[in-house]
Image 1 (cartoon, rainbow, N blue to C red):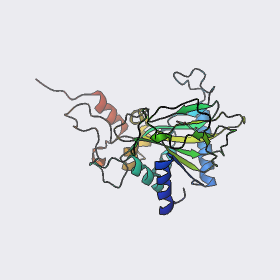
Image 2 (image 1 turned 90 degrees about the vertical axis):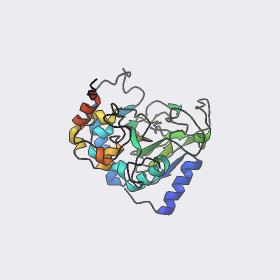
Image 3 (image 1 turned 45 degrees about the vertical axis):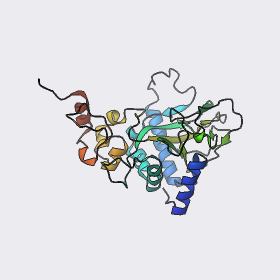
Length: 285
Ligand SMILES: O=C(O)CCC(=O)C(=O)O
């Protein structure tokens, strides 16, 4: 992943604040794109027979590989890039977190999928509720693995709509297509009205979409429960925190009195978290 100069980083932050999205051109080099595409294809083939609950025709609308963090460590490593962390810390770090130093992420991963467009994806927000104002609590980043155009299911946005304080208007006709190239990184405030065009090309349009939230927001998937322990053992403390292991609510006050904690409270294995969550401490009369 290429280094982004400070002046460019400041511009990307300005674009996020004003337009609600920004595009970092050629963030990944060709080898990185190829490596990620090969991993996505392998994961897609490996999960092809899997039924997705609530989606009887799982590939009818689009193709999705869920929970990339469980599939290959490289999917986690790319999230921990210095530029991405700087931007997301600016947007999502809680300055009063206390249990971690102020120069490391305290936001967490909520949802991490690879997606190839199929049918049109209607305008939506992923912040769940709309709200105007400078602060957001959810951000999405897309690693673009195929050139995307209005013909093959590119992302579309309504610039500035993150500040509207309103749910989407799906009848809006004039939408901004993001014509990104393979290797680009697109970042947006999850309050932004966004969707995709239909993919009429007959070819895949893969992008990796990671949703990050402030530490107190409930994760979309139970990332800390489903992560294979073999993967957990390879992670740095910072990566464990990024996946939410420093933001698991305690069972009760004898375990901890805060949802959030620091690296010092991380446990040796995923099994240990399961045990903590299922065995409330015994309180004797
Ligand atoms: O695939 C895309 O470009 C956008 C996906 C999207 O809107 C989402 O994951 O919320």
